[in-house]
Length: 520
Image (tube, rainbow, N blue to C red; front, side, top):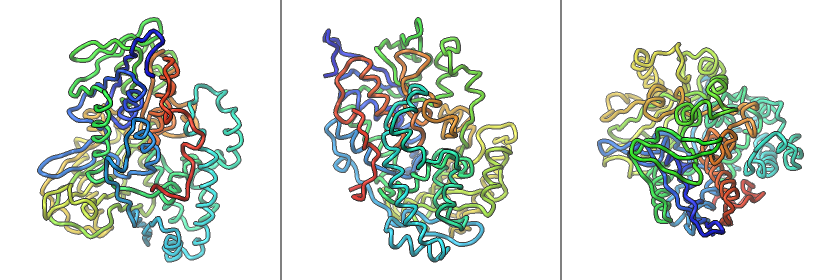
């Protein structure tokens, strides 16, 4: 296992210690390969790393931990147990939604209570929730083989699972159009579609398939890992090293060399690494434009990348504060004119007057993140990726003031007087500090013309011996989906090297199957 017939151990280089790179390292090492991760930063996690200062600890990026089934199976493939390695708290309520147009909704995984919460907001729409839940359970079951399969060309669209699922998926509908089948009140449609922010897209343009995102929350729960999602990354790194993976921090990759159309070596600011294959977990557009020469890429040239639709970005405030606010762990404020807010971001590339935002108040669940008597607030406002219309050096202070003033709309008053620590990230910072192309934090948008085989493929089509993991490849963005990309790419890599696959890497049609047993 993990050996060529000649007995030679295969050597693999992984660029980036983000969630996809770490998951791939565990899978490949458990198959017996010699794996080295090269990470430019001083700690693991990428955009899911921790920010620590003044006794406060923040997640840099993702804060929702969803659908632990995929990571549980990846851990099991290496002989580990997710529940033994870390503490996950299932949230109830999952989050509170506050609508700028009036009203709020406390989302709960208790289905009977959720019907009653909907009835308080929009009585006539309460029966639609059970239909939504039932239909999306079937949709997920139908689409699960597709989410766990590689798409190496258009012919992969002609499989029976894909053809069978089309009537249920209704790809001609937007997510908002799909939700009109269940809910008349536009606030409820937003309550079950704001999750498209995980994809960096508007629900008015996002494909209807992604109604399964909100279904996953109600079927499997929303979790908080003690220590944050960054603690998941640190646990993965620890387990990877125990499986034999070498993680080299503070080592920046400068180039991926090719020879006659195939991968040859990785060059860093310290050394050259020759290997049998390379897995790229860096931001796709940035990595292609900076690591692999344009002449080595036939399909994904710089010119073609420039024509692709990018996701939005995020304006971030990480606040250490005195005391604790009594608001839920997660709160989402949806602006009065949400559609215009999204048009400002995606089409006008300007800053909105009434920006939507999200706040994590993790102190109500996790006391490990701040000194005694203090807590953390994580504030995120979706904004345009880098564009000439917004000069963040000029506009950041004013937008910060606006976002802080918005917080009173969810019950957070006088926050500025209580701030004892603050850090800010703008799209410019995502680009310069985290090597994200144009600061588009969710990579390529998830439009129909940028999904499945039209997305950069897990087995990179332009250069042999190169594999992709992360939000820029199939299946897309979001932690559980990124973990699935690692499983798909690892399976392809091992097959190409003629290596036996650990059982959990093998494709199984029920990988994403829904289960009423929940996440236990």
